[in-house]
Image (cartoon, rainbow over all chains, first blue to last red; front, side, top):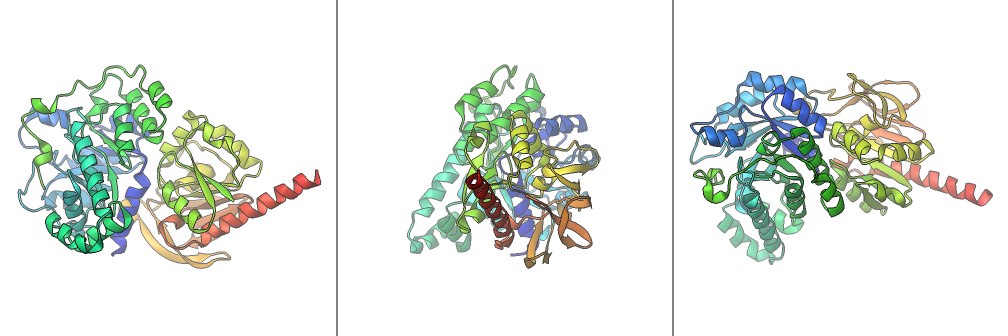
Length: 290
Length: 199
């Protein structure tokens, strides 16, 4: 394994137990950092607005991303379209800390993901199940997140994806070794990755929850289901009191098992993002890139 | 030997695994009630110093942990842990636990593309592998002894019961720095025991 891939997996390890927040301006980035974000995701429009605006959604303006890089001392991530390796090259050129090859943006390639092994900067990718996660890891992703359903404020899909991954990991963990070959075939991933999951009962990289997390309780739910940290997108800056909600979600992730503390954290947060239910949306972003 | 591991955010599990391999017990510190029990030493892991510093304050842990360290509790901080323990932080960020006489330069090697692995001499331990992730280095020291340097920059230091490294021994398979820290903790508890007997 190359040094670079190892160092990139290591950065994800440092983010564990933390909250990565979507921000669209340097001011929001500063609010997120002050509220305790362990990293920020710089993007022009948060997923809820992307969903509302429709049309083709692309990588953000590098100038806007650089503004955010200059505003904070924590790691800055940015999104490129699935398969759009030129956007990824641009993000690497401005020394982004992590690239999210994301289904939130319009896919640029309906067949191939980016060959992430060709890059020095790390990539995080979304996954609905173990097969998707391992395929992205095989392509060079050094961090995985659930896809969830971004921009909805509805946590149901993130829960479904996390439960699916964890249950498949448990299933593979309990298999006889000679059964792993067939599993590798059915998941369309290399045997070595399935063997790693079997031996270690976890993914070979850090796994965060993302998509629809809107409250401290949502964050605690995802952590108890096995997430190693959470991404919060629209949930913060679409809510009544972003500072307070952001800080409460950060604390909820640290003490996700303490219901008493979670009760205190959930008080007086103002209005949560309104959200839309899964049945009410026309576009399922989680179906992009498999 | 029981070591408390600050588990507010970051790579604390990696430290717990190193301790387990060395036969030491550990427990996680996530809130004030977790430090009711005795510990022979404390580890502050890598992660983001801004996040851990904020949570230390808001969960009421900053003052009691600072007092314990000042009265001799052995502590080992890696990366963000080094920043949290430093008396001065380059760039104006307010210091946190502020117990070791060093100045920490945050993100001293730049962004993730500047992260690197090296092998270098650690005083008394020989050449060991060192992993630097968006790491700080020690830009100045007044009272602390420098234990390791990479490219002319100080990356590990000790002052009495306080040990800091800019790199992450917990991300390698080399146990020597953790063993060194457990040595400091063992020395301290035997001192404490003999003091009790003397009383």
